[in-house]
Image (tube, rainbow, N blue to C red):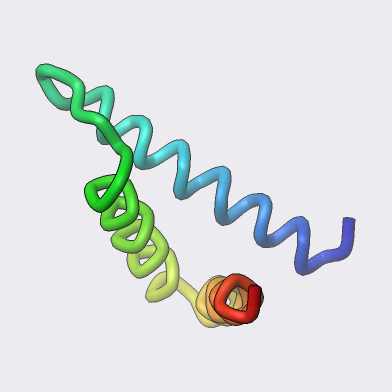
Length: 69
């Protein structure tokens, strides 16, 4: 894997893991699908994006890749 792919894998691992932890913490557990799941992913990506410049650039690159598809 390239350095960019490794960075993307790390970001997605964090995002998905954090969203699953948030969902498990609720009582009863909430479903993280559809709009709720999408909003949780977006919120976590925004949170990570403001932490450091390199993470923000990685996320912007991921966004560009997915918008082009």
